[in-house]
Length: 249
Image (cartoon, rainbow, N blue to C red; front, side, top):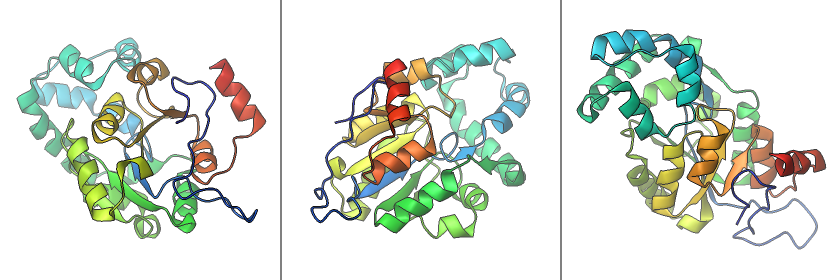
């Protein structure tokens, strides 16, 4: 397995074995499960822009800029407790946010490198699934038809802490064993869901959660950029400068 907690990455062995003929290396997994918001889509600023509106509508506390930075180092459950949001309100909040986003999908862009990453993964023969709490129509509108066509399964509308059953469903539909799959997300709850199902748990450092929070959750792999994801998944060694940066992390 890959080294944990931000240390230098050691890529796991490919389930299908290495390429003995010296050609292109074999993909390391058969299935890649992506989170959407904060992993593929740069939606963090949009969510922050509606935070006060949500607080007023659903009766939870507003937070300052300093508090936002602090909450990035907390787990999703800790954030919910801090804001004073009852669990029973979460579905209604989610529906409201998704309806609002449906009117503003043009404000959300993909992170740099995501478009190329999805194309490279699909071209390699690995299958791709998207598991997100966001609405499927919103995700597809932001991705655009070209990328939507490269994704094999969409499991959208998952409850905030209900991703694990969606992972299991994707595994069944794809006929892939857990050890042959990797989940890539930007929050601690993504890592926890991966642990429940037994897939490789990878965190990305360009999304919502602070590095310390992700490290504390114990992922198998932490990625600094979409390019690092491509390097590892496609069986290419990390560049020397990438390895050095990870040793210093």
